[in-house]
Image (cartoon, rainbow, N blue to C red):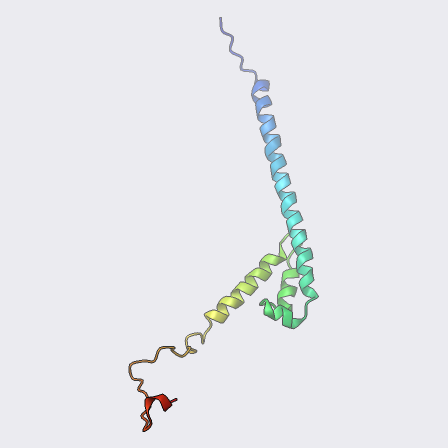
Length: 125
């Protein structure tokens, strides 16, 4: 004779370790993210010690730093700084007057003619 046990304690006993593990994984992930944000805040603080020329070289300015530090503590300021630098680079490449400046062609076009000279070809410049 087969006994079927439908005790609720057996079912919940198997679920508890999985719930504890998932709750622990969520908490651990949150702590890792917070540690990364704090580490990046310390690294971004180093940018405040740079002069304006050095900041301009990496595509930032003082107002970008102020905006990044105005974010709440749990937000990563380096995300704001990276977005600002990326936007300035793309604006510089694809800005409003990006199509007006063109480099001269290396190969002469078909209308180009050698200057006429009375001297032999070896003396032309």
